[in-house]
Length: 145
Ligand SMILES: [Cu+2]
Image (tube, rainbow, N blue to C red; front, side):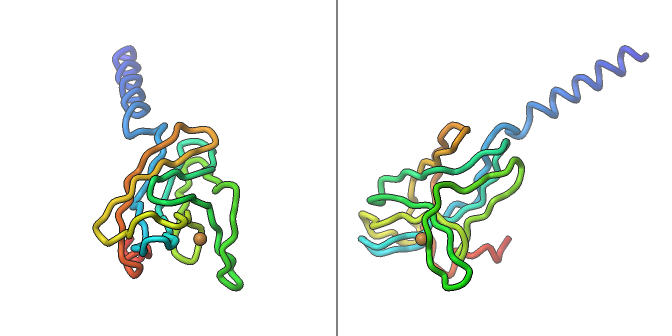
């Protein structure tokens, strides 16, 4: 009896480890604000890292360059940062009036309903390609979650 029990426990443990992408970066609701050609667009999402990591860069064809920005709490000034820290298992939210990725001088108008492809680059994890929905500015907040 005890042998059967041990085997059952071992099988359950294997299923628990293998499922649900435990080693994967998880990105929720990537979205970009609608922006006229030549202007700067903000990218927001929520990201959860499987292990301690940092987001160090974002690549995309739609912008001349990208920056990681933190928004100062006093006057709303946007400041460059080298990376966003991603503590293991902790959702990190980029959102209006907070941290965000700036897509600078977009090469085409970004209209609601468009999609933008981006590659996230990390300190440790492999690069990850995501697709962000272009949304009206008033749709960018997290109020529905
Ligand atoms: Cu910015």
